[in-house]
Image (cartoon, rainbow, N blue to C red; front, top):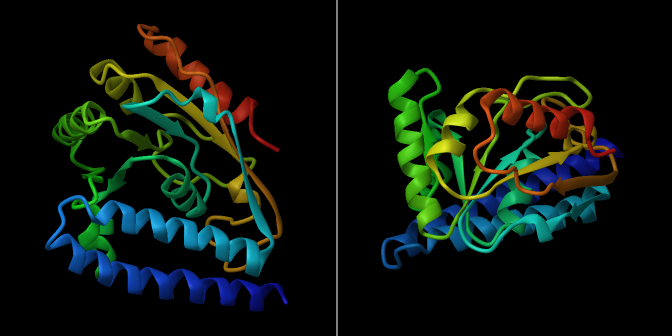
Length: 231
């Protein structure tokens, strides 16, 4: 039964993704900025499909800690579900994403028109400079820059490591940095096809103070991600 429910959800996710991507490509030709609402619509459709088909309910706590306007959300990353959640709940998300995703048919062509920021993970200092420039532009436009500082999805309950790039970003983009923890991998794991019913929690913590030393900044993020993991 679980596999059947997961299959039904995948039909909704990929089917709506294909249709909305096509619509986004068409509308993007005539309406600058039109791709982002299409992407957000897809995120909401997918969360609905998860509730109906898989019995997964997303609970978001701490939204009061997200300031209006530009901000950086330093989010824990356990599952593809994280992307859908942030698309659905943030007013104007701007993801930092790996460049390879641009190769996905239709969907990939919408990422940059929607204001998302590709990064070459093997590009060294040049890639970091490009990421910072894109984040500064997005934050100045009042968007919420979403970055996964671990650099990859981590299995639920596994302690990873926050990478140094988030410190560079925080120092260069003078907006609040809001840490966010999740348990999404408990119900939608990294590689599993089946989805496990239950409640997914996303918790936004108070913004980190500006001017923190590097080690203190990283220690606080690690504490939120791994010691304060949402159950």
